[in-house]
Length: 473
Image (tube, rainbow, N blue to C red; front, side, top):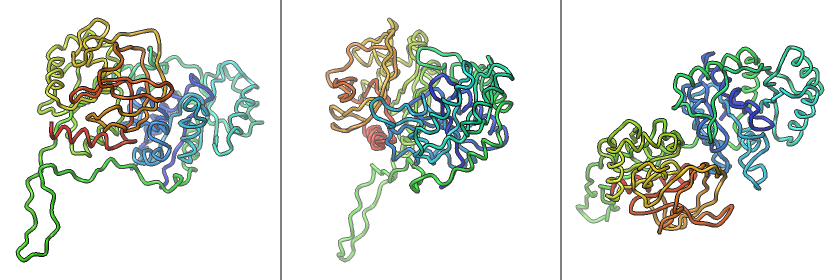
């Protein structure tokens, strides 16, 4: 299967990948192309800008969380029906999971997709040296095809001329030159860019500015031609699908005909209605992989999104609750002030209904966050700190829960500046085996709460198990 595609990479973080990738997505979309947006790694924030640029769901490609074998299928799933795909890289081109070689790096994903790479270089403090830099990145791994360079933060026409002259010797075409431009700057906070959901009109303006900058400074025709030069995705991969065999919990198992005279097929009962799974959204809970909702729906749930900042009750008929990541610390006062919803969530959890909470969701279920009352589901407190906890984790389920049976192995990612005390309950959620051995998180009744962000596509049984519990709790 072939999809025209580009990977936007850089020598290091801060070079302008997000500006260029988002601008390219928006500029191609403005030309009438259906653009599929993707992001390498576990980042939740950049895909929000990508979605704004393209009108399609931003999706992540993470070779660590999902395994290399799922990268191409997940890419093809997201790119169905699209004319072109743009993949924004992570960190520097060759930077991957710590101590794991190329695993989960932008270069690794580019090779798994067979996609040409466009290298975005911050040229603000160099001239002729840019050729040595580009040459090094082009020659480091012959399997990575760097198809062109976009020079970012170029100061003047003279500066541009010097850079172009130097790059002639590197043999890599210059596909764009971008001047320094304040309007495309996006505000940052303690965990990166401020999410789209919090900026609304400002985010729309920022994406429009990125599109204008890229359209004015880049050779879009050459970039599209480079994308179309990519052949079939390697390995003959088929698109990933969230589908499961149908579940009919109200139907008895059908028996094979006995062959006896007069034997009749077993009668079946009507299908049970789809259980409602409430999915937290809104500005406070923006961290969620699109595949999770798709997996829940495929497992038979009716997924209904609600906003804990505004909605005072859970969706009608809620049988299960999923609260992902985000920034509850920024909205602690407003979340606390919504006492009716906090009470409803507490009652749902105490009833034994399935509740899955990750990171921000964990904080929301605590007694309090920075002194503000939260849902009180967990006998724990949470607070902001100066210390950043960041990195991939290998984990194993300590005991049975609504998400997984004991012994299930999954990979996760931590990204927060908060601490929960205690860090684990009497029944922990996970035993973390790397980079250091410890237990963390909480399992009690139907609640599974943890700091670990996981990608359920790597273990689709998680969604099916959760929905089955929603049916029976």
